[in-house]
Length: 260
Image (cartoon, rainbow, N blue to C red):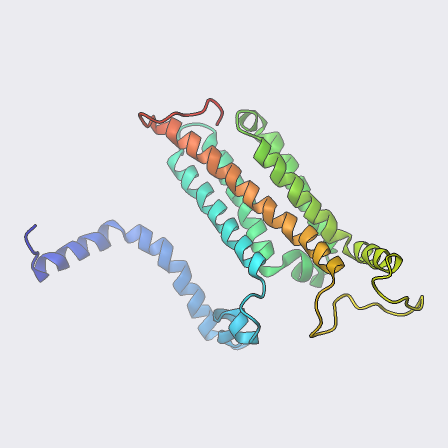
């Protein structure tokens, strides 16, 4: 290949700017607007909004490890949905299925990232229990609208995802009662000293001490099931997307399952 002159490279760059102007506008436009708003506002230090939370708080690097991995998997699921909707647009109802699934995924991602149901929503007067009931409602509506499509898919993974995230939600909504049960079991097994009836039991181990088995099991039960549910949801979407895209474009020499 002959080396290209600077003038040729410049001309190609200009052509690329023209052909990709919409991509650049929709990609950089919102980001630049956000950065401008952050720079002009005077309520919150910009560093608190742009820097990594671990570096700001000087916390150990492993803080929030599983939660951050969950956000990455949520992001992967959302990307799968949006790309699949774009590729399947105009070819039937599957584009709508992926758009709706992407919307649900984005809502769950934002909730996990900003702790909507734990802090923001209760701060405006909406009980956490009430807001959390939105998710089962959305799941029922999604299943009702796309029932015919869901029956064509390998639905074991979506049932697994719903079950795991449902367990996590129940544990989250009843955490006080569950903590009390764990403490009662520990006392029965003589794993912790007896306390007076009115004595407040701390919800966390004193700083510098090893976490108890009961606390580890509780957090694995709540956060671990949610993490596994996110993985199951993403695997389901990726499987359906793969099969539908291969079927849409009739890729040769690829064995496509009858199920979506």
